[in-house]
Structure formats: structure tokens, C-alpha cells
Image 1: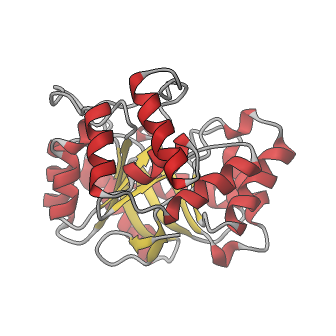
Image 2: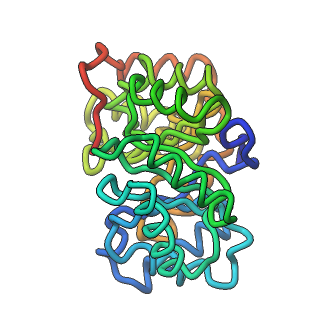
Length: 279
């Protein structure tokens, strides 16, 4: 499993983690077993959010007794992102997760509260030892510029954004911005939330050919492609232990320039959209 520095001053974090959106809709025992199987396989970056229903308590159960192994991330919804609201929301997440701190705490998407207030809340949490780092999610370049102007260099740990083979819009401007400013880019929904390329499609055939060549799966090839750039991470979600182990195996795949070019051609990034795509 490859690891990379998370942001400017963060620790080395595996390039592949575990997402938990909708994980609470799966059988609870299977979901907990899957998260633990992922940890065993090296998927120690676990991402969740207060918005994800019962996902935080589920994660708390899965990591009980193993907290030191985990790079744990949660997110605050914009409606709770006032200065005091951020602190209160974080305290609730910590209780649900059964831990005394988060490794990173993110603003889920831009909202109505001034970023100055949200960042002040993050700073208070960091000073109190409740979070190690803070970041953002679903931020386009203008939002990132604003956050950088408020916080200063080296403070934004990551930007979590939609990123999969059929949705590569972030490569136009957001990914380059993050690289320039030492901000980790974490791609969510790497399998397209139900829109993974079908086996019989042109792109699916390219994935199948590469999967056979590397002795792996089409999804593992997709994950390897989405983490090809320095500073990039991805957080696939699954409720099946065997898929968690397969996701982890993708962390050791190093695609050749020719293989990357084949995938670039099969899944073109298209024109830059007017607004940042998000789910």
C-alpha cells in the first residue's frame, strides 16, 4: 500500500481509504466486519460525517480497540458551521465515534456562515486537541482561494471532491490548485455511485484488458488511475470484506505511462464545467 503525506504537515496516509456514505444502510455486522477487514489490509484512512446517519457510531464500533491505527476523518454540515456550532458538532461526532480526537475535520461544503467563523471554530478545536488537522470538501478554486486567504499557507489539509473515471472535472483547476498549495485531494465515489463503466462498453473493455494484465479487477485499475497523481487519495465505500481487500490491493499497482494514456483516452476529462460537480 502506497502512502503519501496528507497535506503540508500531515502524516503519511495510505492513498486508498474507506468511505462510509450509505454504509449504515447495509447489515451492521457486515459493515463493521468490512471496516475491520479494511484495517487489516492497510486501509487505515476512514472517512465519515455527521450527515451520514448512523455511520459514525458504526465506525466507532469498528475501530474500538484500534483507534491508534486509524487516520479518522469526519465532516460538519454547513448548517452547523458557525464558530460555536463547529465546536458543538465536533463534540457530538467525537461522542458517536467513541474517541477523544479526530485526525481531520472538514467543512462538508460551502455554506451560509462566513468562512472566517468556521475556520475560527476549527482553530479552537485544534488548540484544544480535539482535531489534528482541518480541511474542506466540495470546494472549487474560488472557495479554496478564500479559505487560503483567511487561514494562510499550510493550514488547509485537504479538499474532498467527487472524482471517478467518468467525472474528472477536478483535473482542470482544483487538482492543480491543491498541488500548488500542498493540499491533499481526496476523491470520493471513485466507482461513480452506481455508474461504473459496464464491462461491454469501450471503457469497460480497456479496464478489463488492464485488469487481466495486472491480475486484478477493473475497479482496482480505476482506483490505481485515480491515485496516480502525487497528493491524491481516494475513499471507496463497500460493505463486503472481500471488496475491501481488493481495494487495498490496488494500492500497490503502478500503472505504466502507456496504461495511463489508454485510460485517459477511454475516459476523457471533457471541458471544464461552470461549477464543481458534487453529490
